[in-house]
Image 1: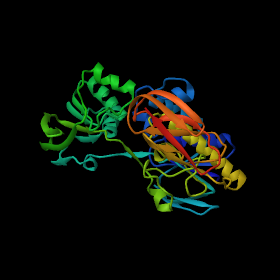
Image 2: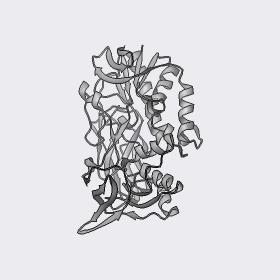
Image 3: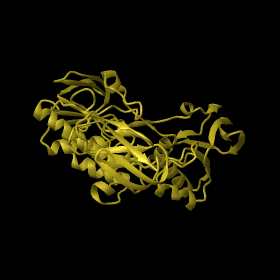
Image 4: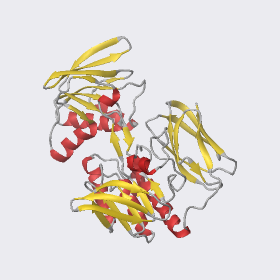
Length: 389
């Protein structure tokens, strides 16, 4: 065994496919269905960058699953033991515990959703409170309408997509509530609010839920103003958090800006031979970016095996500067042009991105839209990445 891929979503499957193309023997560990979140995303918008086609989530999942011809171990990855030459992944399966050994691991375990209590919503413990992903699964996998009158917390892409799905199925979306002064979703998804005449309440927060048995109303506040909105369902679309428990336990360094692991330009973590990709590395707006990261990680794993490790060098540290929330990778090779994923901190109408290898005119930018750029830095310690307005 050359590579153990933890996670059978778009990043993990893309990593496994690329690793096979490079002649490596691969096993994918997946506790649920292959394809990750894709099978419940019945809308289009997937695969545009990778295949040049506008696919639905199930269509993309089908394509990835059919392209991977290797072994799949169904089970829960419960442990990751690290040594330089040999990594052990402990997997709990229906038949018992299985331990896999390989010189490299690609960690693509995805992310989890933030829940209501995590963002400070208090009140009655009642039915009718869902994360946006849970509601999406109910509707698109099981055909269950989660509610009739809905308030959505957060203007991220999943919440906006659910606003459309609920409206199409006859539910009334009473409001999308966003605590920031600007919306969090992609421009194409924000059109949904206009199309279905759904109010967007910026600089507002849902702070309390009341009901007997089921949600009956929620309290929305903005500054000193507050109001109650009647509804039977509350959807929380408050963002994702990378799932890094196994990496953290194994000793990997976690970047506080991304909540994912610190990586070099091969997407290798601080544990040599363990690579990360997809939403467990950094929360991506586009599934195509997660898939690209899977391929980069696979190429890094092949290099690690072929060379006996990623060549040691004086890494250039990438430092997020003005109006940059995060940059991945955090370490790059001197003189090597690499792909970097940059998250802005605030929206600007006329932005310029400053990189070690020059300046790029961006125009309008939003924190909801990750920037994908090519970065090249010479030897000399650090590389600053800044966005000016």
